[in-house]
Amino acid sequence: MARPASLPIVLLHGCGGSAAETYVRTGWVERLAASGRTVVPVTLPGHGVGASHDPAAYADLAGAVLADLPPQFDGIGFSLGGKLLLEVAARAPDRVGRLVIGGVGDNAFAPEKSGEASAAALADGIGPNSPPPLRSFYASCIASGVDLLAIAAILRRSPNPVLDADRLSRVTAPVLLVNGDADPIATPAGALMAALAQVQPVTLPGIDHLSLPANADFLRHALAFLEDSK
Image (cartoon, rainbow, N blue to C red; front, side, top):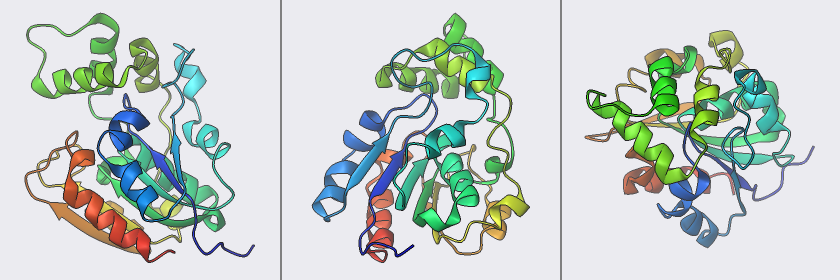
C-alpha cells in the first residue's frame, strides 16, 4: 500500500482523560492543524457517553481502538493512550508511520500502578488521607467529565495490552519517547527503549506525569519529529 505524503495524526489520551483536556485545551490540536496535518482525536473505550461499568467490556482496548483508526496514520499517545498505540503498531505495523509516546516507560510491561487503589477512589470517593497522586488523578477525571465508575472498571479489567520485548520487536515505526524526570509512573524506561527498533528518547526536567501533556517542550519536540513524516 502506497503511503500518503502526509498522514493523518491520531491522538490518544490517557486513562480518565479526554481529547479535549489532553490535546485541545493544551494547544496540540491547534498547532498540529496549523502545520497542515489532519488531526483525529480518539475517545478511548469507556470514556464516552454510555460507557460500561463492567471490566469485561474492556478486555481488548487496543482492538477496539484499532477498529476506528484511519488506514494509515501517525500517532500521539499519552499514558494509556501511548501503551495502546504501541500495541496497535505491533498488530498492524504497516498502518503506522511515526509515533509520539509520552508518559510511558517500563510501566508498559505491567498493569497500571495503584490500579485497584485508583479504582476504589473513583468508585467510593476521595478520603481525607488519600495520597496526593490519587487526588490529582481523581481531579483529572473530574475535569475530563468522564464516568468515574466506567474508569474504575477499566482499571479493574484483565491486564491489556500485554506488551513484552517480543511484541515490541514488531513495531517498525520510529518512536519519539518523551517523559518527565519527575514522573515515577513512566520512569525508568530503559527496558522499553531497548525493545524498540527505532526510538528517540527525550527527558524533560521537573515534569511529572499529569503535567506532561501541557508542557510546551513536549509539543515542540513532537512537532519537529512529526515534520519528518510529511
